[in-house]
Length: 137
Image (cartoon, rainbow, N blue to C red; front, top):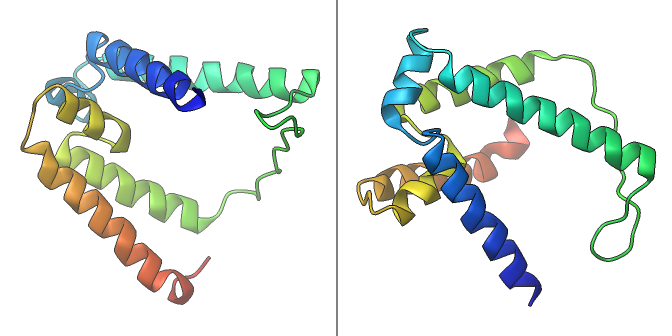
């Protein structure tokens, strides 16, 4: 029954992203070309929602689904690894026209060539797992 709740939330989230055109390659292209505010607005709303959500979790001392307190660890100050990782992620996003979440939404919408993007994302994750111990963290 719990899985059904998560499936329903994912389904609604996919509809919201589709209707807001956040999964549109053209909207993503416009963003990287600085031609439209549309995607930046969506990203800013997501950041604001996350900030408010984290503050609610911290101030209300909310618990997870197992009844354990949610602990949010403090992040280390800015680091070169965050910049490098962000740049690599951004290049992939710009080249493919999709970040990880919308890959599944696009597949669900019937855009079958996105299977190649999903394969690339999974392969990249696999490679990271292989070389993780050798990379500077």
